[in-house]
Amino acid sequence: MLLDLSNLLVDTGQTRPAVACLKRLVHLEPGNVDAWAEPGRRPVHGRPLQEGITSCHEAIARDADNVMALYNLALAYEHLGRYDDALVWCAKSGEGAQGPFASRAGTARAGAETGRNG
Image (tube, rainbow, N blue to C red; front, side):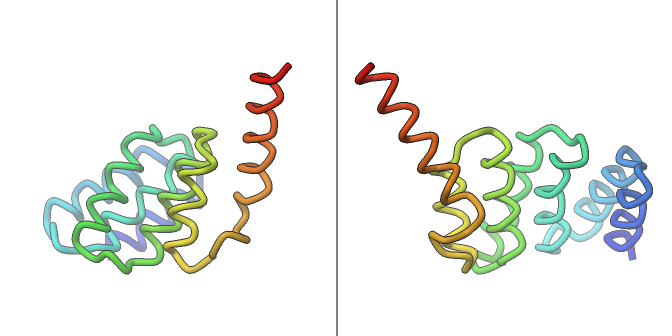
């Protein structure tokens, strides 16, 4: 129920109460993988990126095959501009190398190579 409430709060732009719901849920149910994985989406909604990354790693430690945690971790790394890391986690989530980060990773690598060679 707290996870659903958190999602509703985010949908209505109430990020702080949503985060509070997730923190409470993790406190009450530390084994709830979805509660740990969900904050990985929050950087999109103003959450600090590192908190989302840490939460996703907690979820993955509890369930290495949790697709939501793997994909949310990829999203968080994408927001940091760490496209190669995003690709790794995207591939683990089942999205594969053709996931949404592939073109950005290639562009970032090409720009870095041009900068070194130029």
